[in-house]
Length: 569
Image (tube, rainbow, N blue to C red; front, side, top):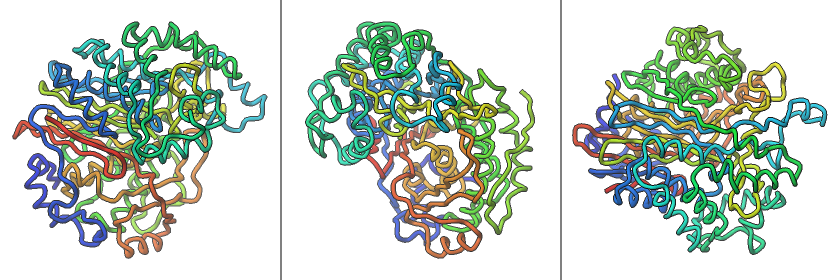
């Protein structure tokens, strides 16, 4: 039986973890007393982001009278500056908000749509078999700024000038670039240096900044000042919109002033599934959030706890459940304004039981067909929680690190390349159409029990995300890990399932196991027909906040693989 209530008391979690985790993962310290760094704990407020400066700004904003919504926007603005390798206001945003006053969850889809003047025929006539990842063709409307103002208008407390001022200060005075960000800026520059405007902002001396170098972005500071003084219309109907329009047209693209001016975000109802008495909430398509729920619905049919964390049985069943969920993802997930997405059917428990029957417990599946559900009805992740009980789960991205590389003159940010995820197969649900939202990989998550908010969390990283959303909960529920251990434990990554662009898995894909799984487990998986491949770095970036209702404190956890930092007061 699941024992997630253990996590409400950190001390008890530490004592239980050693007896529930296998000794086989002995090359990591997971599973021993104080197995990883302690969870962050605080009585009033908590922030967990992927960069320490952003976490500190979030806390400062809440201490100055702002709430969790103000704090998450302020931190996101800082992250767009200090971590441009994963996010920025040229990208999209999704959020789940627990509003303490109404005691309800609210979902926001702040993603943009494709240019209305671009057509499928253009790609066909010019010989494209897929949409390129860089340049002006994969551009879609950036939705993040509208997302900020939607969140702020509905839930914020401080003036937007105060919310954006910390990011403005860092953009003007500079900040020291961390080792991780310097590394990823170098990797991005290797493929984006020749994109219009990129080098002017990010390679001012002919190269990207080195570790510890103080980096300034005065153009972004000026952009943030416009937003603070003139509001969201400065971006979508004012100077910024006209700058983007002229720059993109100059370089042969299609994203226009009209596309920006017509943009609006969408408030959506988060959807849930119950996994061993805990409700996991995700946003519905156009995101891939329900894939995590489909994985858990399938795995709920099995006694995962008895299999053991470092066991071929658990890893095999997890990978097969992921394959099944991702086949449905490839077929059904798309913009609901253009397609009838059978969300209720995909999350139906009976459907999950039927899908689970396809799993051979001894052999890896080479391919699966999408199901027929009942028809009723690099990225950053951050989370904040305040003294009044409000909690925000927010994720924001350029896609592919620094996006398209296209950096309009004088604005200080790159434009996203999310349009790359459209298919060019006219029969595919996610086919390119003018004014359509592409399939989206970025997903925030939230957990409740008995109607009470427990956990806001996310794991950045493309198709990694639903796999890790599921693994975090399995680690906590089935293997009794605490909030930090659940993120630090070695991860399972399967790649090669059918993609939203229309390509189909036919060879079973590839399983990558992070350091910490035993050699014997790896050998047994190979015997079962899995193809194992070493991979370094693509396992995502995790942040989480847990609300301990019994002690009335917040618990925070952050990613040990990157610059993650959780702190409170």
